[in-house]
Length: 573
Image (cartoon, rainbow, N blue to C red; front, side, top):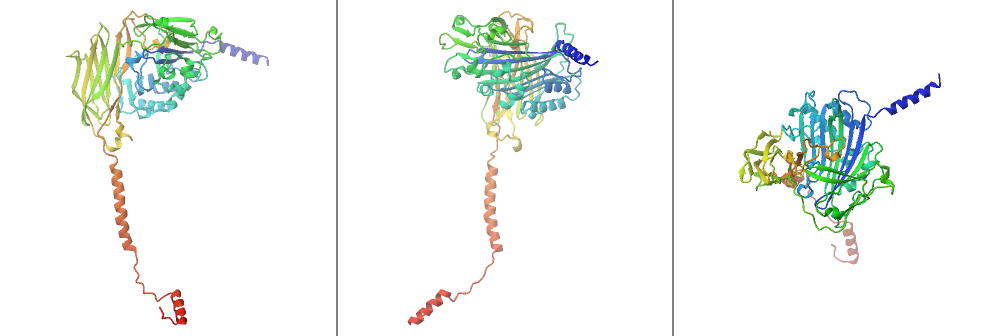
């Protein structure tokens, strides 16, 4: 009976090893030369788990992070989207982003219908995420949380669209640093030890013009029949490097110049590991570009209404590392380029504050539709803190000198120290037009305990959010989600005639009436001085003892002098 033990053990290991894993990992890096001369690097790590975390009792985690899996199960989360961003994406100079995020921290979550107290679950969830990512998400409360009615629809498989189970908040003052990047990298199956994550060197990533890291969790269909559900975790990181500063005024770049490292291998747990280099060109630019080493394949796709060409480097292909042990992708220009014509995005916007004084002001938002002949609607979301009291009757929408009435409007007024203003509008943008939206406000006077440690710096206002289906100039080809690159599959095109875009404007910095906080210091100093002088003198007079001293007849020196004078016959002193 003894020899059967090892045989049974080997049989058990063989059968368990032959079982198809229920989770998979895809990693991807997209390198895009921007029209301004900068270089954008977009990392995407997609972990897919064929399991229902909320129905099945899951105790073993392989690739999916256990911390996030338990979080989804405990708080009945339907979708979770978190982004931490430093800088602002310059749409007019850099083009349309694949996935833009506002400056600071953004969090929006869809909960299941089974959640009875959504506000409590939202508060507990933000506190836990604050600890996981070392961010200040614990400052999310009712004063900066809104419940959008039309914006931020579920991105995944959704059976419930009741907006009462949605929560959205932005912390525009949040500063992103290495303590946020480290826990984000630890969620990766290979961490930063292998694969594309070896390029995530903190000192290089934060020496950039724009840095945004995000986590997106959503349920998706397991197959084409969509009879069962899978969970998708997508970790994205977008960085924009100034190639002129790093390349001494040249647009040439390489992986080593940008990241100070090269690629040596793919993540052993990844089923797909690819590097895409955007080599799309217009006119004669194609003859001026030189990419080395030569790509083994080229991928053409319709992305954001434009045809793009990508050089593909598959890290799982053994022939990629035949010549050397590392991959250092380089892009060179055969002759210097003075400048390229900037392609104006079809949809972009800007926002600013106008007015003078510290009593009233005006918020203006400009939305541009540069499409030559197509009009389309855009959904605008405005979140304004309670200490800026909006005058909703002053809301004006002007397009080409005429009033533009929104087809849908939802306004929720703020309550002092309880909730912010929420304004949602569906506006039709005519072709080749500029729409200006203005609204006036009054500044409130805060309590002295409500001011920040640097009140003269100002108070931040969350950026506006624009969501739209932008018509495509070309006919877009609908591709299979599993076959298409990750950067084109988060917002897939349904019919090929339009693509979804979500844009954010600049966060605003508004000054409020601020008291002179140096006056208490001056009062304390003056009061202490007066008290010290008056009380000290009065106390001295009350406690001092006065004595009358009798005149002294002389000391030892005087007596000795008189003895000497007497011996010499001189008159005494």
